[in-house]
Length: 339
Image (cartoon, rainbow, N blue to C red; front, side, top):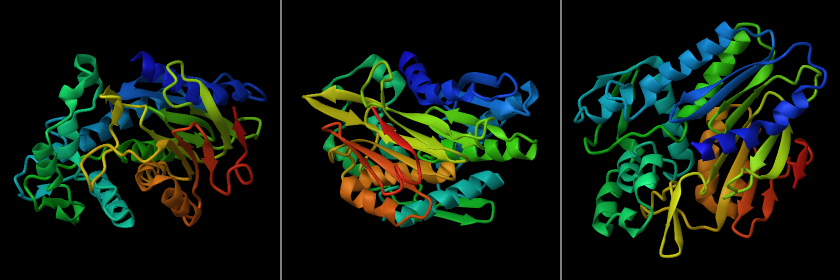
């Protein structure tokens, strides 16, 4: 929990410091624990406590749809269906379709049926509190079995009816759910007259409008493996989102190697490609969520090529020598400061 709050603090520090200049009223902020992480919503102008409460209610509602661990969620029902059709909420069908589209874009590197493999590795907060050694590495035959069930083509969507054609596959929307929820929160706030604020869902940061003085909001990018949440760089954005994927978020060490939560759908093991993190800046948070994972999976060269040919997307890659690599729009279209 201490690490989660450190990450939250460093990501938002710049936004809060720079927001004070020129604002007309004190911002309204609510912080809590949801979506298995610390989340925060801040409204600079035209806000109310009721709007903040409704944002958190939205997060809880969508968690109830998308979580693979809540027994009566849409995703849990699909996973337990043994291949029989399941009727889901509109938002679940939409998010599944987005996940499949990114599966196609990435050639399967991003795959929403990775749930069984993720459960096998169990690189979670609870697991890391209990053990941090080689006993956490699954056996090769277990990995091969779990990997054989990872294939997003097994998911069939017909309106609101979802069929998992491989009954042993397990859907996990953790790679895009927070981004989708942040986008829905933003829509809700705009519909209710909010013109300035930000949403942070465990490091998925979405900025609504400019600051009250009309200037962009400065968002910090964490230095990987910094226990105190030191800053590696910052970007200034308006009406955009910043999403990072990195090996420092959830991991354990064994035999001198780091085993993290970003799993290779080709090998079943965590990626070992020289990257520590990828931060993506886009308009929609769900896209930033997916693209940060995909770019990490592609590695520096191919990941940067994908960003450069994706309209409206920029990125900062940090390699294992702690060097920062930026796409062409960083420092030109998007103000950038390296620390």
